[in-house]
Image 1 (cartoon, rainbow, N blue to C red):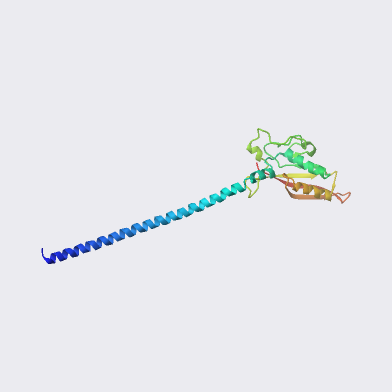
Image 2 (cartoon, helix red, strand yellow; image 1 turned 90 degrees about the horizontal axis):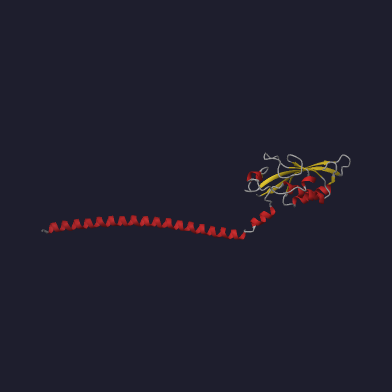
Length: 222
């Protein structure tokens, strides 16, 4: 073998080694890039899991912290729309302030005459009769019955509103101070917590006395 062939052989070998080195370096670089992307993705997932765990821990602490709120809500907001109970409380507040009521009216219901018995037919109850009526919803009442006459409260899921119209006895007008005391009692009652509107009619015989019509909102969380 001549020295020229050996030289060309060595040149070829060096070229092959350089090509192999370049290919190897390219493969290693590609593999490292892929591993780096995988590692970045895993780190991002790990951070997301840590944030979720942190949020879960905070939520868990909040559940413990506000565990009593459900019981408080049940004690503040009635869980039934018992018309008899509402009428009884309205009559009691009125009696405490020396006010006679002419009628207590509830929204019309397509399910029948409502819960209150002993009152007038339809959706208007006689305060004197309904005050002694049995309260609550019958055992056979369905969820649809429980939600009849109710309107969902916007922004507060699960809470409903029942409108009640209260009219004073026009034959027995009251003083303005009596009306104010009556309103104060209504707004501190758990069933009639909001007075939506009021219409006052002064007495023709004596302007110091008046008759009134109130629209109340009863809030219920079945």
